[in-house]
Image (cartoon, rainbow, N blue to C red):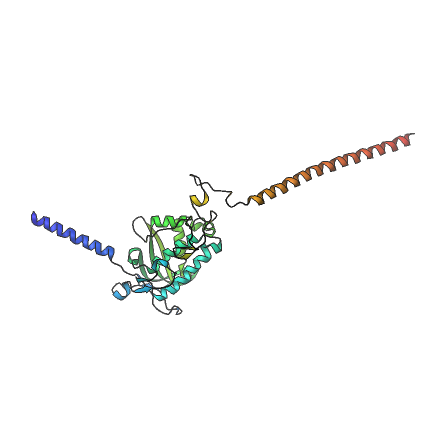
Length: 306
C-alpha cells in the first residue's frame, strides 16, 4: 500500500507540473516577417516545429500603437505585423470613433483586443490557425489564412456594451450581439489583409482583459494611452452617463437645449394667437360685408317696387 501511495503522489506531482508548464508556456501562432508592400507578403501559421517562429521573439517599441505592449520584450508581432496593425487600427477610428459620431471608448476597447490578437505572447491560448484556403466572397476568390479567435465571454459582453449605441453598430443588424460585433470585424478583415477570422466566445477560455466602460473619463485627452474624447449617452451605454433608472429607460431629454425649446414654444404660441384672431377678424369682416350687401339689395328691391 505504501508503494501505491507513493506512486499516486509522484503521479499527482508530475501531472501538476505538466499543467503548470502548459499554463506558463507561451507560443506565437501567426508568422509574418517580410516586405509589407510585397503582394506575396501574407501571414501564415507559425511552424510549431520551428522554435524561432513560435517563441515570442520581438521587442515591441511602437509608440502608443498598443500601449499595453509599450517596450515589451517577447511580443509575437513582427515589424511587418505592426505596420499592418497600424493601418487596421486607424480604420477603427473612422468607423466607430467620435469623428464618425461614435464612441472613442468603444474604439479603445476594440484596439486593445486586436493588439492582443497580434502581439500577445499567449496567442496559443486563444488562437487556432489553419492553412491558407480559397474563399469566394462577393463572387471573388480570395486566398486567405483561416484563424479562429476566442474571446472570454464576459470580456466580449462588456466590450459590446461600450459599442452597442455607436451609430454604425446600431444600424447594422448583424452587429446586434456581442458575437455579431466581433464577427463583423473578423469576417471583414480580408479587406485589409489576407486573413479570415472566425470569432468565438468561451466562458472560461479566450483572451481576457479589462474593459473600459462608457463613463470612463479621459485624462488629458487619453485613456490607457489612446487618444480619446468623452463619450455621451447618445453613443454609449451607461447607467451613470445617461442617468438611467433601474429599468434602463432612455433619458429622452438628454442633451436638449432648453433655451431653444422655450423660444420655439413662444413662437408657436404667438403664431397660434395671430392666426386665431386673424381668422376671427376676417370672419367678422366678411359677415359685415355680407350684411351691407343685403341692405343694398333690399333698398334696390324696394325702389323698384315703388
